[in-house]
Amino acid sequence: MSPSIDDLDRQLISLLRANGRESVVNLASRLGVTRATVNARLDRLIENGVIVGFSVRVRDPAEVSALRAIMLLAVEGRNTREVIRSLRGVPEIAALHTTNGRWDLVAEMSCESLAAFDQALGVIRGIEGIRYSETSILLSSATA
Image 1 (cartoon, rainbow, N blue to C red):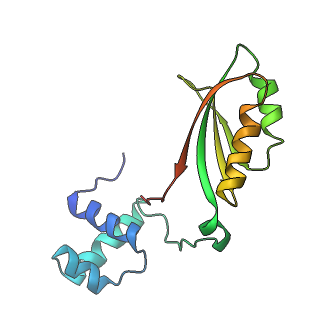
Image 2 (cartoon, rainbow, N blue to C red):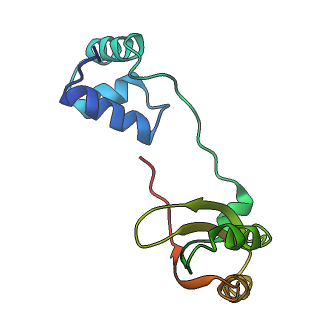
Image 3 (spheres, one colour):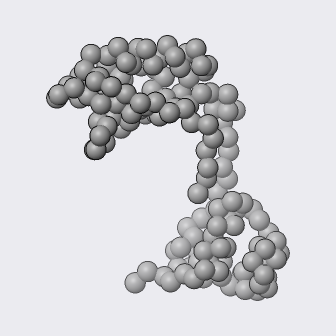
C-alpha cells in the first residue's frame, strides 16, 4: 500500500523542490500552518519513503554558455543502425535515443556557438539514411 498524501503534503513537496534548504519557519509561513505541522509532515513523508533525500542542484558554468537543442530525426527504411553509427561520430550530440511514433531518433545536442550548431546541423542532415529532421533550440530549463 502506497502512503497517502494530501494537498498540504503536495504543496510542501513543491516548495521543497524549488528550494530544498527552505527553513521550517519559512515553509510554515508560506503554507499557513505551524512549524510543528511542517515538522510532523516532513517526518511522515520521510518515514513513508515519499521523500527519499535532499540534494543540491548545481549549474555547470560551461553549460550556461552552451547552445543546447533537441533534434528529431526520421530515418529512411531500415537504416537506423547505420544512421546511429554515423551519428555517434558527431561530437555535438550529447545523447541519442530511439523512439516510436513519427520520429525514429531524438538527438540531444550541445554546441559552443550558433555557428558550430549550424555546422553540426549540416553534418547531421547530410548523413545518408536521414529522411528529414526537426530541431528545437532549448531556451531555458524548468525544474520539477
